[in-house]
Length: 308
Image (tube, rainbow, N blue to C red; front, side, top):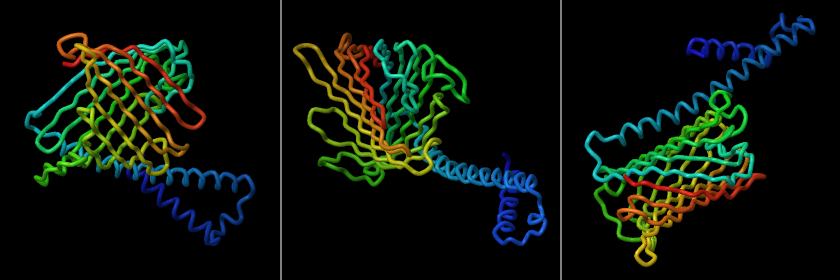
C-alpha cells in the first residue's frame, strides 16, 4: 500500500465511521439487507487496513530507531580486536515436530545439520556481534514454513548485536562486579515464517569467577508475531578450563523472552575440547533446550568449531 492509498483509506475509514456513529447518513438507513451486508463488509475491510497501518507505523518507528543505532555502531576505522568462528553441528535426535519460532528447528526425519558463522569485534566505543545460522533437514520447519509460505529444506537465521560502551564514552572505569555498561540493540531476521524482531536495551559485562567473558542483556522488543512490546533477557558466557594438558571450554547462551503466548526459554550449552593449535579447532557436544507453552525439547548435537 503506497502513501496515497493509505491516506485515502484512512480518510474514508474516518468518514464512514463518523457516519455510522452519528447515525446521520440517510442513504445508509435506506439500504436493503444485501446492500447493508456489502457496506458493512467494506467498513470491516477498512478497519483491518487501519489496524494494519497502525502496526506498520509502530514497526517502522522501531526499525528507524534501530537503523540509527546500526549506523552509529559501524565505525570506519578498523576493529581493535576481532574473532570469527565457524560451527558445524549434527543431530539424529530431533524428536519433536514443533519448530522454535525464529529458528525453524524441526525435521520430518528427526535429523538436522546446522552451520553457524559468528563474528565478534571491538572498536573504540563498543563492539559488534554477528551470527548467521544455516539449518538443513528434510522438510525443515514443517510444511509452508519458508518465506512467504514456501516449502524448504533449509532455513537462515541472522542476529546482529551492536553495543555502545557508556563507560568508554564517558571515559570512566568500573572495577567491581559490573565491568562495563552498554546501550545495545539486537536485530533478528529469519526465513522461517519470515520472522523479524528489533530489540533495544541495556547490556552489562560482568565479572563472574571462572569465566573469561560474561554478558547480560535486557531488551524491549518488537516482532512481527507479537502485538505488543515484549521483553528479552540474553545471557552469554565463555568459560575456558583445563583437564590435564587438554584445553576445554564450557560456553553458553540463554534467552528468556515474553510473547503473546507466554514466556519462552531457550538455552545452548557447549562442552568442547581443543584439538589443534590451542583451541583453533575444537570438538565436543552441544545440548540445546527450548521450553514454552505446551512444548519442550532437549536436543544433543555433535559439534566441530573452527576459530579463524
